[in-house]
Length: 198
Length: 228
Image (tube, rainbow over all chains, first blue to last red; front, side):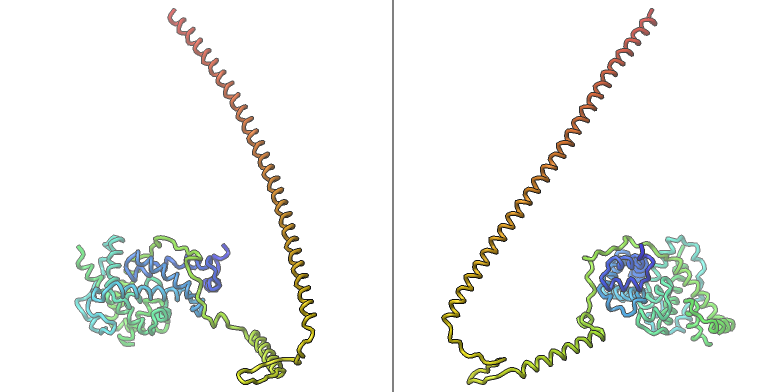
């Protein structure tokens, strides 16, 4: 019970010394977050659970490579994110993305903004939570991986841009652009869903 | 700020990372740019919809790792042998002493070169021994003495082991006897309890049958009186 209040940093140091109980405590703290991160990135519970498990195993094996034990969570997210990308590459062809407008992150922002008729997101409230959940899940699945991971890490995990930049190994400005593009894409997808709904 | 810059500020705002001074700049731009204002409102709504639409869910099964499931962290060989500065100093001094000692030993060595070989020797040269027969005799005696000692030691060890074994057997027998007595007394207690219980059951059965007889008699008497 004394370990419950111990910081991640101290637990990581204990794990490096071979303490399996300390590791299980870290697992208990982060398993839900990691599972949800993986679920939103791969869109499948079973694969997300496997990725979550693999992430912890890899983390345990590579614990000595963690330079700053204070950034354990960030490092864990990075491992999970890399596993999700590997899973994504091995299981899905790139053509499966339904992207409205342009596809790559280099797409013209002005074109994206000026595309189509005026957009209204009003009407989302008429959906039941379960319906809204399906719509959101589907909308997220249409995003390219680099936009999806940025949206997930920012909106759902609440990480700072600098932390996302470290996890995805990209400059902060690119992270912001990806978030902007991701949200813009989502806006179009959601608007179309609203319109086509009965 | 222009529209392009305002988008970055908008992302900062949506990510709760907008500085106070930048917030004022963004507000000024939104006051004069209606398209950015619309965009701002729409993206805020998208973010809120996405966040509310897919809340966190519980992991299907809690993960618990056992030591044998996960391999120990692989530590590089250099990390394993890495020394502190103090250890390095001590090791350096030890190495210096060893090198000096080796050099001194080599300086004491005498090397003789034959046709096909090199012979290295240390210390003074011994003269060939001339008393070999007496040496042989003393060797034989020493050998016999050693053999006797070994035989005696083996005999002693055998005796000690036999004594220990006997002691262990006696102890084991005593333990077994004690356990047997304990078991017997428990069985006796159990039998006694059973007898007592059985006698109580019999008494109750007799009592019950007499009660039944009484009831039957009463019933018969009452029935007869009703008939009359």
